Image (cartoon, rainbow, N blue to C red):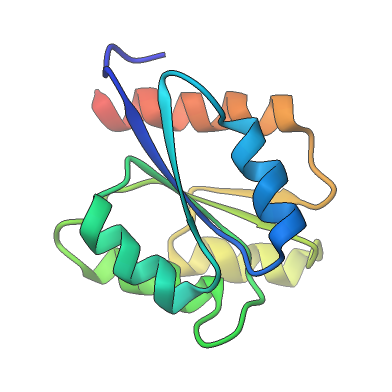
Length: 129
């Protein structure tokens, strides 16, 4: 991991059980986990906590993960924050849409927590270089 003392991770997922699984994936040091139930709440929270990494679902009420990712990319304070899409929409078209919106990585549900955490750590390393 990078030499950052604490890494703020924002998890944006509308299903509570999946939000909890994602939170457990990043539980404990050096991570500080923040949770949001939809893209709109996630965008508001991102502006408040300035996360080092965002994980988002694609399908959510109010604002979906694509709109959230695009909004993050337009915000000068958040534009460089890595975004990982974690979704049940595991088809090539959804993956292309996610990358087209500015995502840095794409994981299909069910996902490997170990692989997800490893990818997140790699993105955090790249982000700080």
